[in-house]
Amino acid sequence: MALATPLLEDAILKAFEESSKIKIDTESNSDNSDKSEKARKNTAKALAEAIETFIKSGTVNTTVTTTGGTSAQTGTGTGKIS
Image 1: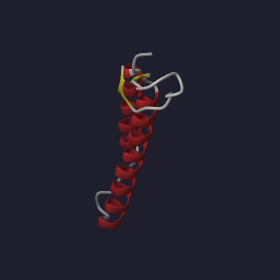
Image 2: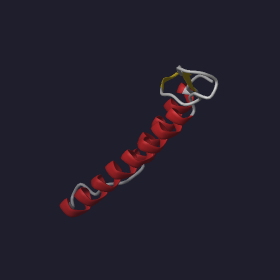
Image 3: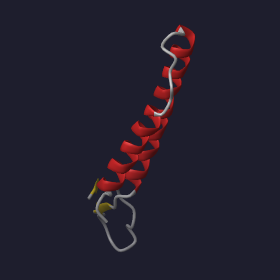
């Protein structure tokens, strides 16, 4: 299965839109700082969740090469997200 890029784009857009909804009182330094920090943290969390979901939406294809007879069923392989 290919990676779900449109879903990642939608999730990123949603994270930024939610961040934009936080109202900041520019007259209050403490309120400005607190809400700005909250907006950044919320955005970072939403982006991390979106990226994790995106990565997990892919398929990993691996090739394992073993040596020996039919009893040699263990080995190492490398994989790529496709």
